[in-house]
Length: 204
Image 1 (cartoon, rainbow, N blue to C red):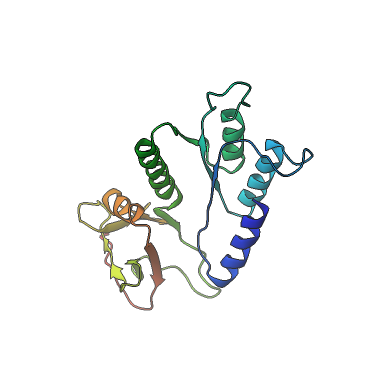
Image 2 (cartoon, helix red, strand yellow):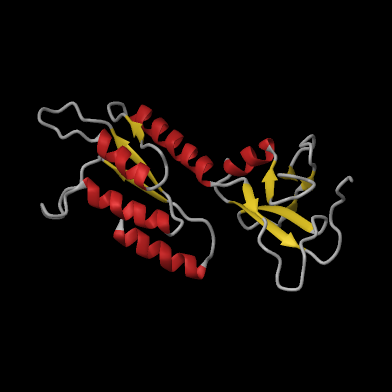
């Protein structure tokens, strides 16, 4: 966890963006010396990362059916909660095909949970004011060109976005279908541009 947190800190400097840690574990720290083989220390690292805006997701193996095996689920949930993600994703390992499917499902769920479909509108620079009609929202997949999303406060249009409030907007919100499409694409990126000219029209 310490090494991953340091790596993420470096990456954020070079490539700003939203980052998350996915800890894949059997749920019991070993090999670090008895002083450090404590779930509490792992949870503390997850909490530290969360303070810096980096949530920690946990994928783990439930208590193994082995005599005298340590309890693992409580510890994995403790790390997940400390990392701001509520609970660990548990998978079984008895059947390779089932394990693969369960692991993929956990990763997909984490991807969906970690990609936000709501963007807070930042304060306008000094001497300027926010103009809700001068906003462009785009999405990009991989190395492709940005595609403009359609503003639709009622979300009746495909590939659309809206404001949380048309009268007093504080957030840009992707409509449900748009959000689902972006969360399903691991290469998707969302762009928001504040332009100099009107891009959309908000009915008054």
